[in-house]
Length: 136
View (cartoon, rainbow, N blue to C red):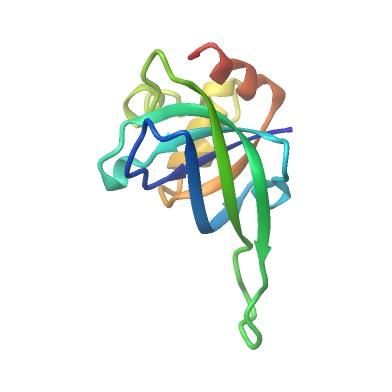
């Protein structure tokens, strides 16, 4: 399974990304060492969307805090960049894809990343991962 992360990216051209205690949704908590991950620079922090593809070199689940009933699982990751995106893909390109039940990979990305615009790690369908591969 492939994953994607939308987060604040200070240096989009770095070869090693470090993400600490990132929120997970849509299967993102299952990310593991060796998985392919697509890196999106969050537009909420001035980024431009898809910037890189990488491989997870470490993934560590953050223990839940005691006494809090509802907690979103969080994971810390290290990602080695394997490619830089050649074309843009972000909120502007995905915004028109609002029929979230149409089964299209672009609609899946719009739903998972921008319906709730917080930064997060998400699991991807094979079709969404294949679409993202075309940007490299």
